[in-house]
Each structure stands twice: as structure tokens, then as C-alpha cells.
Image (cartoon, rainbow, N blue to C red; front, side, top):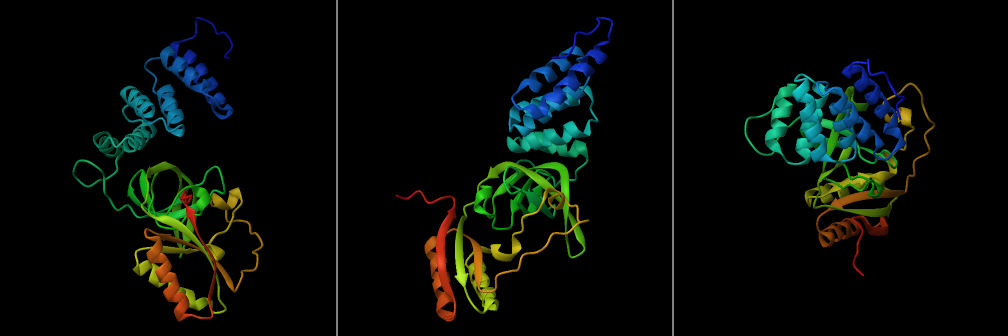
Length: 301
């Protein structure tokens, strides 16, 4: 608890003391910082900072109505507060409050197509960190609007996500990924906005002719699915690498040449098995060693 202070301090000074104290509590867990941010806001009703911080705290808890309300209060006190404007847009998007979201993005300066209702824009490719409490897996996505993106990879099952999920993401850049000379920002996912209809399957395939896997990938994609070669494309990075520090290297483990661990996204299990069986029939040197539904888990008895 803050030390007792002199009554001669100004409202702003008292508010600053309470606001700093709340900030120190953020990483300790619980909800104590919420109380002290509110106390800071009460100490100086004209200051935007405690309201912005309160909205930030609610954002990271996924308490979207409270976050929206707090960020609105911050903007009432400081109309050009860019952070409050952006976070209001995220909260409004989470709540499908499209009029508020559009208002917030335009106020921030984001160019959007005219219209009402859900925002459907093409804002380009983005890298998304989707498993913040686990491996920190980063996948590619297509941005629909400033706070939503559709996953374009087949994520690992432990991430709790799947191909074509629409996720809500933060606006602070947390590292970068460079592909073919172009650098893309990495944003942390804040949660699932809309679940995909796809199911994630795992297949372990043995083949001495790995080039034939291209035909399997093409067949799955023609059937409306997607394939990820988890054998070679998945790498576990240290925190510095994950956040874009490429100044150091790690030794690479030798890649397997005969067994391939595939993640496959599909909406129809029978159709997928048919595609696999057709491919195996056309490539008798290949064997399907394991095949299972990985995510969501199969709850059938």
C-alpha cells in the first residue's frame, strides 16, 4: 500500500503515486492493481493515464466490456490518446460492437472501407504468436481488420487453435519474421474470436521418396484442406529468437529423411481418409504409420 502522503500534494501528484503503485502490482497476479488504478482515477478525475492503464489491465484479462468502458473514459479526458483509441478498437471488436470499432480505428487514423457491421478488409500477411503460455508457436495469418486475423497454417494441437480460426490480436509488435527479404511484424494473439470448422489430424508417413509428398499436399488442398509438414517447418526458438533477435545462432538437428510428421486440416474425416488411401495406392513405397484426430479431441466413446 502506498505510504501516507501530505494533504498539500496536488490531485495529480496523488494520482501519479497511486498509478505507479498499481503498475508495480501488475505482475503479481490477482486484481489488486484494478483497485489502485480506480483510486488513481478518483484522485485526479481529469487525468487519462489511470483510465488507460485500467483498460489495459482489463484487456489482458479478456474483460472486454470493462476495457471498452475504461478506454472511453481515457479518451474523454484526452481525445488524442493513441493507446486508448487502439485498445478501444480491440475491445469493441471483441464485443462485435462494429460502430465503436470503426469509430476508434478512424480516430486512430486507420483507413477502412466504408460501410457498417463487421469490417472486412485485406490488410496483408502477419505473424501471430498463438500459444503464449506454452511453446510460443508463431503462425502466419491474413489480417481482416486491425485486430483480427485468420490463421493460414495448421497449428500444433497444444496451441488450442486450428487452421482458419479467426483470432483477436494485440497491436504491439512483439518481434519480426523475415521471409524472402521482407520483414513481417509478430503480434500476440489475445484469444479466439471465431472458431474454424476445420479439424486437425496428425499423420506419420514413412517414405523413401519424400518428393512424392507434394502430390499428397496438392490432393489435400484440392479437397479443401491444408497440410503442414511439422517434421521440418516447426522449430522451437529461445525467447530472443522468437522476438526477432537474429544476432545469434543455434545448432540445427539433422532432419529425418524417411518419416514425416504431418498436420492436416480437414472438415470431413472420411473424405480425408479417401485422399490418403488414393495417394498411398499411387505410391506403394509409402506407408501410413499413424493417423489420428488431434484437435479438437475426439470425444466419441
